[in-house]
Length: 138
Image (tube, rainbow, N blue to C red; front, side, top):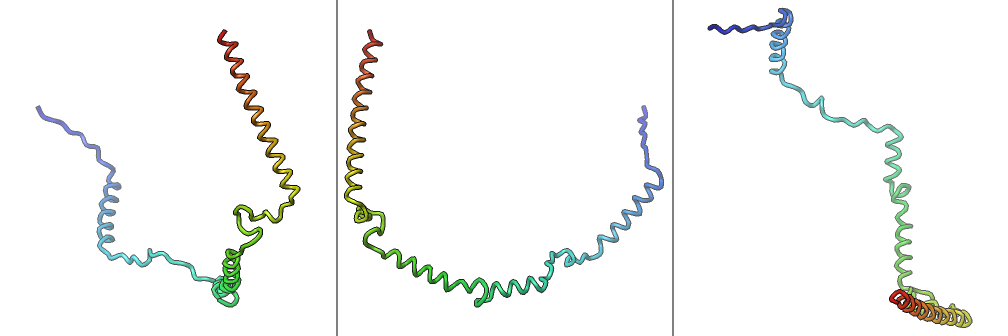
């Protein structure tokens, strides 16, 4: 038994275009390509941009002109670390000489009262818990 094959071919003008394209692409790919045309480029700076850069990098008028102030600030910070005496630092007694004796009496009285109230509250809460436990158990 013979096998029958059916092929559907494109129109003649499409075959001609494909053949012509294949010939032209082979000729184009054989030519060397100048890749320097694909290199990234940066636009040149205009006059205002150049002037701004020059002014910013000038040590007399630009960002460098702030250097004396930075040096003085560093010197002042170093000197401040050496301060000692009343009010200097955060240690115990650093502000003691500024406190009034009357103020310390008020603070001591208030703290004593807080402690007394805390003890009373603790005692009443433990009694009520025992009382509640006894009621629930019976």
